[in-house]
Length: 63
Image (tube, rainbow, N blue to C red):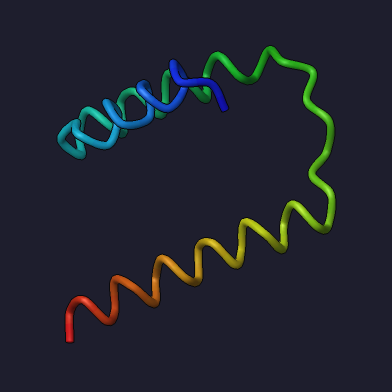
């Protein structure tokens, strides 16, 4: 990922939740026009793993 992409993501993370949702919807609206290849099983497993680890961290922070 480029430095510019990282900067965009960091800026996104700093937005209030309602603005994050608005930006996310706009990005998804634009992505509909891309010819994307289907995700592989490996992609799905890696994304699921990242999600579960993030949820575990959130749960640990609440305890």
